[in-house]
View 1 (cartoon, helix red, strand yellow):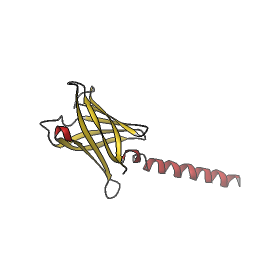
View 2 (spheres, one colour):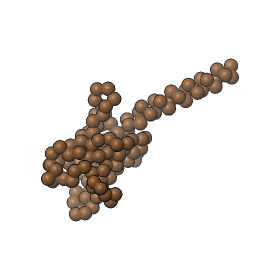
View 3 (spheres, helix red, strand yellow):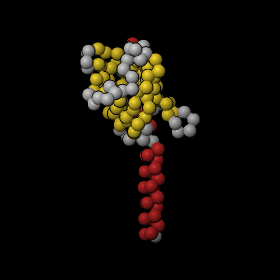
View 4 (tube, helix red, strand yellow):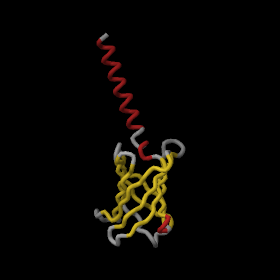
Length: 136
């Protein structure tokens, strides 16, 4: 009986760990909006982030900066339960916005904190608080 309980406990632990790993990115799904702040010129801009799960397990991360007329996608670099790191790749408006920057998204309660640094720099030049507009 004791061996059975130990085995059941181990199976439960392994199952819950695997489920948590599969859902580690679920906090990020949906549509998010906010107002960004640019540190170098103290300007603000609107941003819209949309995360969709495509066929299979592949996710797409679309970013739009409507007030700046630029946008594109984010390529996922790493993710855990509370943070995701991306490389931003613009497909329009590169003459209006910096391209190929590093993006960090941190989960804080029901909001996302957006931090941006230009390619080749560690200095944060843009930030925002994003609120979920539509679940994924």
